[in-house]
Amino acid sequence: MKTPSPAKTNTLQTLDRGLQVLALIATRAGGWSIAELAAELGVHRAIAYRLVATLEQHGLIARLRDGRIVTGAGVLRLSANFESQLRTLARPFLQELAEASGATAFLTVAQGEDCTAIQVCEPQAVDFRMSYRVGSRHPVTAGAAGIAILAARPAAASDGDAVKEARRLGYSLTRGELQKGAVGIASALLGTAAAPLPFEACVGVVAMEDLDSARCARLVTACARELAAALA
Image 1 (cartoon, one colour):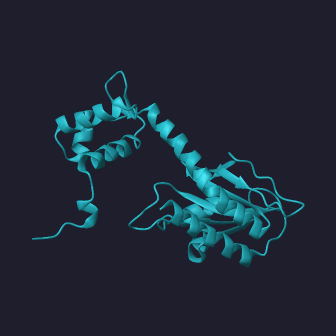
Image 2 (image 1 turned 180 degrees about the horizontal axis):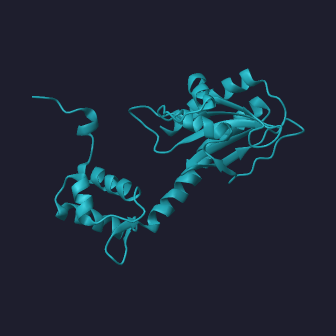
Image 3 (image 1 turned 180 degrees about the vertical axis):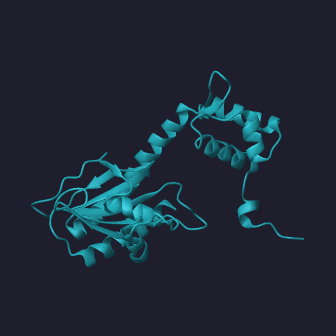
């Protein structure tokens, strides 16, 4: 008899299916019908209906007038709580990185086609430091943060030289890409096969003067590893 893998034996099937439903619904702006969800999950329509009804009771999904199912406002509450917890957890790691590098440290997450800084820490031991605002947003295809996140994804034909180099090195380095004179270094947070991270993010530093790039790259990649381990 074949022994089930630990991942299978430790999975609560109903919860697993409910999470699959949430993930599926988030992929289609126009919503899903019960029949479509049942077919996609490979379950009877009655099971799909019960899953939907349970998620709807918790506000995680909602029904449009035509009966199609879309993401509910409850997901936004979870997202806001998650971001707050992530910022709190990341802050001591970023403050240590900022002090060690003498540059402004940041945590950036991917949101659709953009990157958004959700936590920023400035070094206290330097007289001049670059201001980097929480909520700062830019395309994922630009800047040290965006390139680091793209480099953590599977290789694609559209990858530019900067992404390929960042994937090889484990960090990205840009000069004057988003702001004239700014130097940025970033490294993605990477999960493991056993504990994958459910989001795309990176940590990095930015300064308005030249950095000791080799030293700061080591600090940034170490911070990324430590924060990813703490999240896992």
